[in-house]
Length: 70
Image 1 (cartoon, one colour):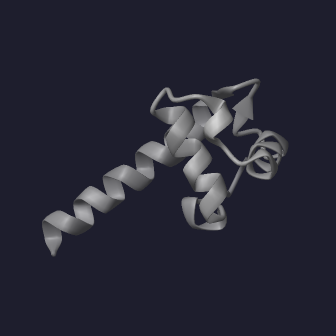
Image 2 (cartoon, one colour; image 1 turned 90 degrees about the vertical axis):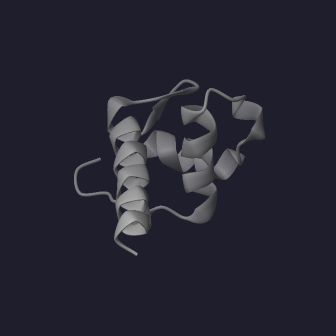
Image 3 (spheres, rainbow, N blue to C red; image 1 turned 180 degrees about the horizontal axis):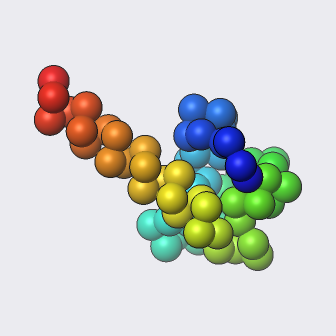
């Protein structure tokens, strides 16, 4: 997981992290994206790891900061 940023993930992987982070069903996620996230160590079972939560949190905070500055 070391060195992976939000931008390194494709749209389906980002969507899967957003869905799982919001507590929605894993069935809404793309299977290939889930498999890749599992391989990267960002999900275990149907839950985000702490690293995935940090990626998601960092992205949200960056977006909010960008909007405040703009």
